[in-house]
Amino acid sequence: MKKVLFIIVVSFLAFTSCIENYSNGERIGVITKFSKSGVIWDSWDGLLNVTQTGMNSSGEPFTFSVDNDVNDENIIKRLQSAANHGWKVKIVYHQVWGFKNFVNNRGESNYFVDKLIILDKNFSEKFNFNKSNEQNGSVHDTIYVVINNSNK
Image (tube, rainbow, N blue to C red; front, side, top):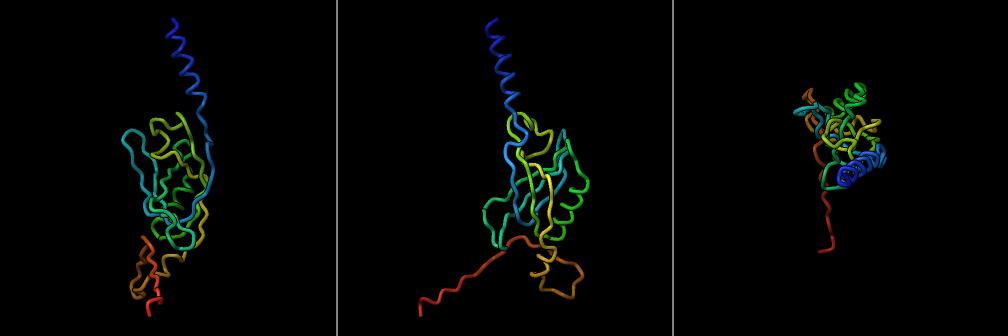
């Protein structure tokens, strides 16, 4: 009887300690992947190449999801456009903690997009060298070269 009571108490504490807004924040960058996938639950998930001034600020991209419980079509369409055109965006998100997304029923990651702000629609055009082609490419990475004149 004590074991059953212990299991009930531990389960109750585990489920009540779940937090919907564990952290809130924003990230700026270029979306390098945005797709719908899933085995049991389909979800929209993506990768953001984090940047501030055009230079990568982290080696690993930021993984985010669109919450299946909310499933805002406007955000999905804007994320698709930003990924296809290479726009620089700001993603405002919240992170869940605990059993709020235990079986990935809401998305692959625990970071869910609340708002999308488009910062620069011409970001990829700055790197388009072939002006005669109608198709615009997308920025995948930015390379900076530093020239050091100290060895004269």
